Amino acid sequence: MIYVPAFLVLIPVVTGILILMFRNERMYLLAFLAQTLITVLAVSYFFVFRDDFASGAFVLGGWPEHIGITLANDRLSMSFIFLTILLWWVVLFYKYEPRKTDHSFLFFFLFLQGVFFGLLQTNDLFNLFVFIELTTIVATVLVGFKKTGSSLRAAIYYLLINTSGILMFLIGVLLLYNVFGTINLLHIRDNMEAMDSERLVQLAYILMMAGISIKAAIFPVYTWLPKAHGAAQSAVSALLSGLIVKSGVYLFIRMNQMFAALSLDYVDFFFIIGALTAIVGVVFALSQKDIKQILAYHTVSQVGIVFMGLAQVDAMTAHGGLLHAFHHGMFKSLLFLCAGVIIKVYRTKNVSEIRGVMKTMPFVSAMMIIGMLSITGAPLFNGYISKSIIKYGIEANPFQYAALFAVNIGTAASFIKASQIFFGEKPLSYAVKKRPPYVALAILSILCLVFGVFFAPLSDFFFTVDISHVSILSARGILEYALYLIAGYLIFRLIIKKDGSLIQRLRGFRPSFETANYVFVLYMAAMALHFIVL
View 1 (cartoon, rainbow, N blue to C red):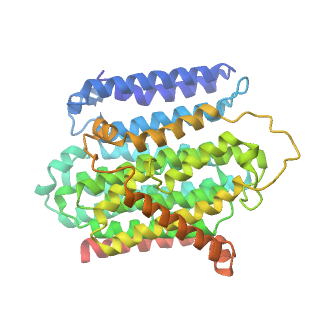
View 2: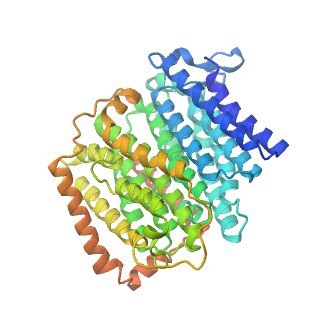
View 3: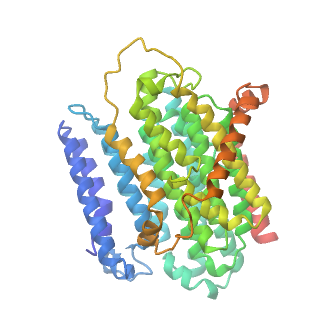
């Protein structure tokens, strides 16, 4: 069992290589077999070591921990591992076509899973950098996989802006090595109070968090995300939004655990950044007509809500932010996959040109409505649970509560706009031949409901955190959701539907790569001002 962390990295990578080498039509079965083995190993590892994860650490080559490569897990990393396994299963079902295997896609798809497992489990900073870099490179290939002009431009933009962030992360790692003489996360954390160069450590924190901010796509360094989603396949968008962006969330938590003894006042700064991210994301989403761009900007917005929760002193509110990251992975992947099916059938991404989906594809419509109810925070769905925990934690602060309330209204307005696709008449001039991916969509839809109803035992099982105080059918929750819908509908009817010049300008906003880098530098300067000067 102690070798399981290494197997989780190796199995998908080796499987992907075998699929690419032999290119047999039955190779898809090998991918399913690999996923089954990974699932069994991960579940077994969790049950064996869940009371003492430290005993399950694997040190490669028998080196001492402070200088060797260590793969280790805890409840945080294991929860992300389970989310990874879930989404890879779903995309496998979604992409599966009998007698039609895309071997190249499967190779990069499985390779990405392996390196992502490495990112989650590594316990030293340099290998963390290596796995982040590999994740970025493989994701770049998948973004540009269609090989169209727009997809290749988006892929290059994604690669370059993320490389800028990764470079800052690496410089931060070098500074920490200069101070502590080790790059082991646990050793640095344990020796943080005994450091002899606080300014260098503060600078390392700023540089590393700047790089992580790009991975998480938070304001103002989020500009790669709408470009990547707009150009990538829907299955790739589901992975990017559902999981790859969450690597930034995971690293944000990990790095703050490591720097905990430094007593950095990151709460106010990252709450403001989170609130701005949520508001900016929802404003841009309201201006879009491309269904994938609507969903892309809502990824930005929902990540902002995650950071609003994580950037709190109260542990329960921070747990709400973490839960929202997981819930978002489920309902946003569901929305992207449903959108992909609709786009293939209607051959357009424009929500103004798509009508009658409820009649054309009733099953897909039902699944997408579940995703919409989840993201807007309807009672009985998973989005409601995590948003409620965050709301309870910040409601004593009227400004923070108002920011979350405004974002929820904007989210409701945006999906009221998108829901037009279900109604009306749009007879198709061609037959819908391909059956929808029932299994993939049903899995995510069911989980949105399961995590919305059975949230208390699930939270206790995975995180040992009691959230039974959240009521799934409280009068207050129902009333607030009704207010979101009413206010959202009024905003849609009175402002968004008119499509004024301001909305059109927002829709046409496309920052250049040079502008994105200038903004990144200014963002790092703002962090330095907050954490060092002030």
